[in-house]
Length: 307
Image (cartoon, rainbow, N blue to C red; front, side, top):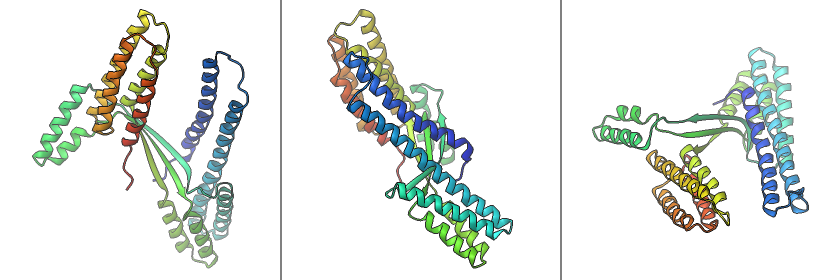
């Protein structure tokens, strides 16, 4: 369950930087819509400052949590080397880090210490995916479970972000218990407590279905063009092409089994409305806002069920 921390730090740091960059882009977009291009003032500045502050706080929490985890591993190494004093010192440092973390965020239940990103992208079209599904279903009906498993093994087009976190309700107490056992000259018992604590690290996956993301990106571009009061023939052709792309990607989303049938039916129906509304060559925006909400719901439905 534990993964290399050295590779994780840049990923988590990028996530934090991304949060700030997103806020900056939103401010710039607002300026562009206002036609000013001037620096943000008032509420916009406050929002930017709040986002930067949140990112900085998150970075500090991450550092404290990772330091506590690293000290736990240092303590285990010291126990194996029969250096109980060094192990106790490491656990004292870990306890200090956790106390700082909890003081900063007393309501925090999970402290992230590792992030792992993997992308799976299938090289097949909708018809090929459907054919594989049919073969797998036939194999299941005949009781050939392993054959079905191999058939559908690669049927995924997604990015999976796995975040490992320390459970703050139990981890600090385990560190203190291990330190107490070491003080009583029970190093093996202390080691078992620490290993058990490490095994309780929570891993949560966030799935980003790529076909759905591509469909959403196509419609975001179409939205900008459709909002124009006076569209050129090239704009209208581009909108049609983008809607066609979105439709193909939604079909692939359905074939791969992401979201629910209801979610995908509503997305498809709304896409038809967008096609009709933009075909009238009048400015269109509200219908795109509605489909954004449907995309968010479909993404939520695509997440793994918590056990």
